[in-house]
Amino acid sequence: MKRWLVSSFILAGVLWAVAALWPRPVPTLGSRTACEAYDGLPNGWGSDPLAGMVRVSGGRFTPGNEAGYPDERPLGAVDVGNFWIDRSEVTRAQFGAFVAATGYVTEAERAGVGAVFRPSQEGAQDTTPLNWWKLVKGADWRHPDGPDAPPAALDGRPVTLVTLADAQAYANWRGNQLPSEAEWEYAARAGSASQRLGELPLDAHGKPAANYWQGIFPLMDMGEDGYTGLAPVGCFAPNAFGLFDMIGNVWEWTTDTQWGPLMSHANGDPGQLRAITGRSASRIIKGGSYLCADNYCARYRTAARERQEADLATSHVGFRTIRPIVP
Image (tube, rainbow, N blue to C red):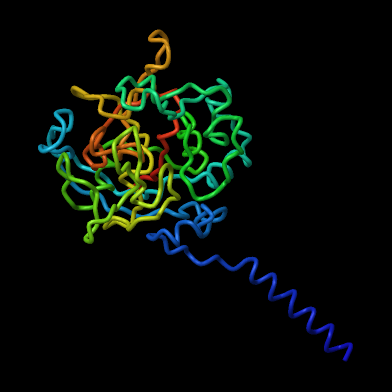
């Protein structure tokens, strides 16, 4: 009996060790049930440098859209090389792992302030951006609603209130980089054409296919997509390359500076909250966010583009990274 018990304990220990080392099943994202169960860390995280990434074969395409805003007009065909790209926006869990490993302090944490979307009821229908955005002391990636609210869980929601430098620091830690606008748009299109201006991101059943604002902005978000605010990554079907949330949820940083005339159709300009002097260079952000509505912004399209101050952390901008494949 004693020998049998000892053998059983040994076997149990071996099985426990094997289970601990065995890779977790790859989460099958693409539905609300799956995304809300996702812990934000892809399979292989911590050991595989390509964990959570999708290989994209490059090619030639023409970015932009003749049927969009004037600043989306195509400038000609471009060639894009092969690269790996995060299948989702970088999550709070992933960014939290980066901070834990490096001790990194974001620009919002160092400045002690971040731009948070807080429309006042009195001015909700006023088009003045100051009625929509507030510079909140203590707002940062762990406290996206400010210091008076509980810290954000390190979960599968996209990290926000990160500047260009913050995103680049994370990318460097992973051995990656931020995408150019052309690389981002090529991946987002996945071989398809960009939507026309005024075309909503709907699925075959006429239901929202992305996290964006349904209703009259900024008065009321009806939440027909299941969310009034940030959604976890991967709640909606991926594009043809297997990438989630290339449209909606949060705008995403690119490395490109502005080219050509750029019209502001974002949800107000949070940069107007700050003094004109000392403003940093802007970068192009892509994809639209949960704040884009049919009556305002309407930039939930792959060709849509907006500028964002490089050192301003806001609650509607996140990022994903790429890793070029060297021939």
